[in-house]
Amino acid sequence: MASRIKHIGVMSQTPPRLFKFYECLFDFRTDVRDPAQERERAKATGHRILASGRVASAFARTVIASDGNIGVAFNQRRPGYPGGLDHFGMAVDDIGEVLKRIKEKYPSVGAVKRPAGRPFVDYSSHDPEGNIFDIAEPGKKQLVGVFTEVENKRPRHIKHFTIRAMNPLALAQYYMDVFEFKEEEKALEDPNFYLTDGTLTMVIAPYKIQDYLGTEHKRPGFDHIGFEVEDLQAFKDDVEVLAKHDPEYLAPKAPNVESEYQVIMDLLRSCRYGKHQLCDPEGNLLDISVG
Image (tube, rainbow, N blue to C red):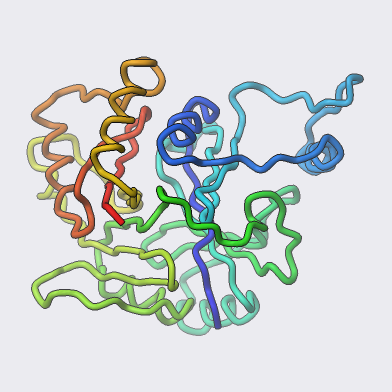
């Protein structure tokens, strides 16, 4: 059974502003719907249609974009939800088989049908450590927008993401059992696990609270997104231009305490892919490698 990681969800205070950072640096693009499509989706999600024919939508609203392969949902943060890197989503050949495997091999793991109006997901579930993911079967679910795109690899694109886990071996086994991800080779002394769907790599790294000695503690879970770029110096120059052009909204988030920030960045530098590390304007961690 084929499984592909197809989207990542980010909870944002102001999604359009955060999207602009990724649009400028990584060539993220939104899907362009005609007014009729927009109205149909608005009806499904409970939005009002104005007399002008346009949808009544706030500026601070979810923005769905793509790097050419992975759809990224910059979701408007809701009350009770933490901000930051939140979940990912997969397209599978047989969603019934996925749910069967979860029920038989991991009975403590649940799954729920998602509400109407979601253009890219049938069910939501979680792994044994509570990391949330969405599941869709393209043959059954009518995907729209960036989720229907044929893969179009751009020079700057998402290459990996990392989850920090209490039991990385067991968590890696879960994704191999249920979704048939393949394990990539690694050095014997490397404590991480590297799973691939053929295009994207999921890194499962150990979580130890001792790693955060000297700074605010961080929970296990979604840690960072890794991008591949065509030229590292050109990328750094672009970041500098953006930061000078709009220091309030397009510059990487400044640290509260430099010494504590360095603890986090040193941990991020331990990723085997990265050549450069930074955070986006809301503090989400990014790891940059060169293709």
